Image (cartoon, rainbow, N blue to C red; front, side, top):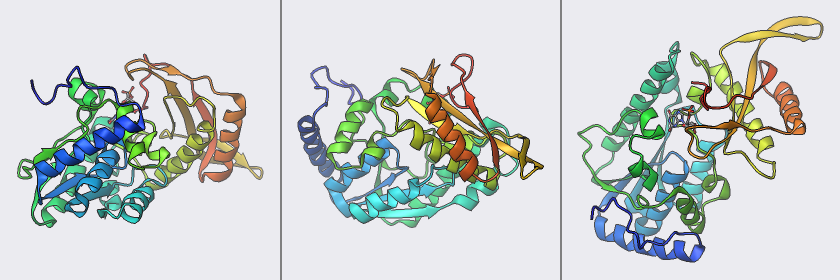
Length: 324
Ligand code: XMP
């Protein structure tokens, strides 16, 4: 049987006890595979790579080097949290790469969504490969592959994400959670002591805010999106039942506002909240007016350059979840 097939006898990991047993098993397996060699991991701060990082820190400590590339398209507070959790709390070897200018310079003036994705994907690989080459003696590459990635290698994620590593970085792979479903990865992450907002975070596309800052990305509009998105997530996150995915979008258009009797042009922020099972179809979530009103008031008061707040009530199909 291929080691990419989940054995039928494998129990669903849904308790801390089962997660602890799984972690112990993987710690042994990783130590056996890696020996005293060094391992590299691209740590985005998403659920899968974070859980792999925490697991490998437990297994091999400083033999692991995590590289966190800040491409400027992450959500508010994310790079800071990666540093706090992994460097400060877990004492990991963490290389933080501030590549914000590099990405935003490459993206300047580019409005086609697939072109934007390609640039972000390629640039990410280039930055990661450059960092890898600076490090001596790496022989293994850890990845947060999970079982749905194997089952749906032609699914949404694969369809959207561009790339793979360059061939001259030919490392042996370490993929300790590749037979786990997402809910199991979360239980393992929680058992490893990762914070809830990291373990239970909603899906976030690889190109990040890049596909939510519609059209050609500008730094000021991107910053306004990041602020508005934080408000949208904070307020919708207070609901008893949170939607599957909820975020802000900032279209590449302006409309008229009025302040102190003067007309001026400003951006519109769009609120998007959907429920779905598999992201192939999705239903717009009916949000309480209270929540919408609070978001509107906060966005207008707190986010520079925004003078209008809209709610996207479209279902998929025909509207995709993301705007690009
Ligand atoms: P769409 O917009 O196609 O999105 O309805 C379906 C799901 O896929 C996510 N998505 C992406 N994920 N890279 C990713 O890793 C991407 O380029 C990308 N584009 C969309 C989207 O957030 C939704 O959950």
